[in-house]
Length: 166
Image (cartoon, rainbow, N blue to C red; front, side, top):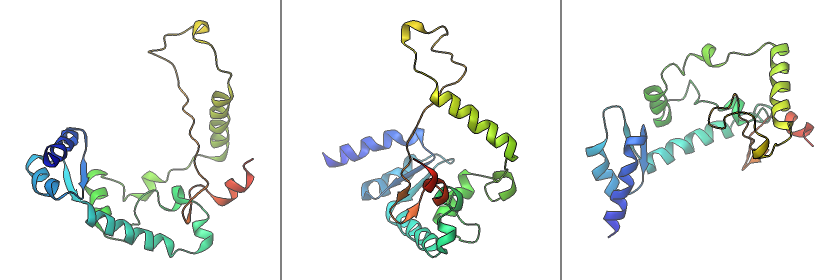
């Protein structure tokens, strides 16, 4: 019965690029079903690689860590080769070209963008009977998420931003 349940997880294969599992049944069976544009990753190997990244980022100076994970760890470090970088190389071509990924808006454009986003988020909610557009084809949609300031030992957002929040 257990193998039948484990086999059911393979139904996710068509919808993923990387299938990660620590189940020995998956380790034996998944490679038989993985397409050439997919990869099976053995869970303990990924866990070791992620532990290596945690050690790498954890060793950074405190001031650098205060910039937040989204800034310092938006992608694997260019200097560290691991299973994680191999996966990024295979499924995220071009990620090593830092200039393309680090494009910054000029301060004025960034300020206008933040203002527009805040206007959308702060706009009053309207009732469904007051809608004057096709809900299946909106011009824009705002989804609000709350991010923890810290998660474990890492700042997720820059410390100075967190210090300014209400």
